[in-house]
Image 1: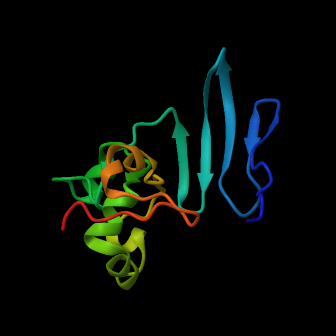
Image 2: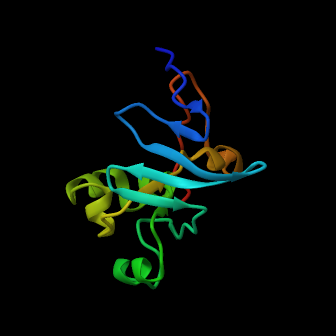
Length: 137
């Protein structure tokens, strides 16, 4: 396994990632609190930020236009739930997560790490990672 170099480099109030990834710039700080802007390929996110959860690719009961009109700059998707329903193949066939969600802004997806602990009876950790059994079927 190739070790990745540290991505974040502090330089005063600015934290950046290389040109292949997002950039976060701190614009103000007060003690440990920071405010800034995260620049991604799909847009900017001003922090601090409210991030609605689209667990299975949708913020329940809301159209993406409504989510944006409520001030959302970014949406959180749950990798574990998307993997099992609708499934990686469905998301890919429909053009990727942005097209599947009809959301053109930034999306943050989690790693599924919470499920490693919360669904420990459905997993077996091995050298390749954490293969999950479906909680659905």
